[in-house]
Structures are given as structure tokens and as C-alpha cells.
Length: 221
Image (tube, rainbow, N blue to C red; front, side):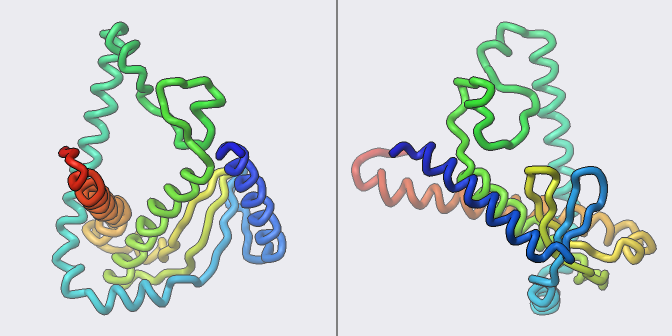
């Protein structure tokens, strides 16, 4: 049986389980606007409090690196968007050879639906794993640095924008609005900083895998 079939079955079963779960706990599900629904819980708040207190000596000086990384990452993204847009506008031949869109949503089965043959297959299983690996540390980092700066955390949970999943940590917006600019910047940039750390960790794991699997066989990289 093809992996595609397994993946589609998994996508259908996963969606049904989510619908059943949300219907059974619909009291915690609230519509914010249009198709955005938030499912609020208290899961993880104790861990956020514990982590912020336990490692406060490390996290406090790290805040300057967090804010700096936020500005650096924004500058890099703006540069890449501008560069790719300029290439597509001024060099159609190069753009045709690159075959890389300037912006593209991270959606399962997108290469197959739009017959984008220059991209690898993107299974629903991959999508769920990516969301988990990106969103969980991203949102927990927001919460950890919010608690480090004495902002109250009201809830954690999942967001549903139609079929799209997201995670969130909800700090007290009124407290943040009254705070100084620096703590606000720290909390805002904490999520992407956590993603950078996880990217480095996974790159090291990937390097270790290649080193242990391919180098003994005589393949160097």
C-alpha cells in the first residue's frame, strides 16, 4: 500500500478525532473572529512558571540576545523577500530556472494539488510534525519570558483558523501594554529565538546522523 494512502487515512482520522474532541469540550472553545476559534486550557502554565523561576539567572541576561535576534531575523527576511522579488521582476529567465516562489503557504499536498513538480511531496504527517516542532517551543518561549517579566499567563491552547492549526500562550495584554518597551520586545521575539535554538539542535542531530551513518561507509560531506 502506498504511503500516500496511509497519510490520507491518517489525515482523515486525525481530523475526525479533533472534531470529536472539540465538540466534547466545546465550552472551552471560543470564536474570536470570522473562522478563528481558540481552545483555551491551563496545560503547561505550571511548567512555564517553574522554568522561568528555575533558570531566571540565565534567562535575564539572555533577553538582550533575544531582542537582537528578533531584529536580525526581521532584517534577513526583509532582505530575502526584496532580493527574490527583484530577481523575479528583472530576470525572468533566472526566475524560470529557480522555480521557487517568493512566498508559499506551508500546506500539506500543495505540490500535488498545484502540480508543482520541482518540490518534494509534502505529506500531512510531515505538516503535523512541523507544526508541533515549531509551534510548541515557540509559544512556550513567549510564555516563559512573559513570566520572567512578571506578566500573568491567562491560558495556553490551540487555535483553529478553518482547517489550519496553531498553538498559543495568552499573556495579560493589559499588563504588557502598560510595561516598558524592552519587556514587550523580549516577549515578542522569544518565539523566533526558540525556533533558532531548535533549528541549531536539529542541524546538529542531522550532522551526527550523517557522521555516524555515512562516514563509516566512506562517504564524506
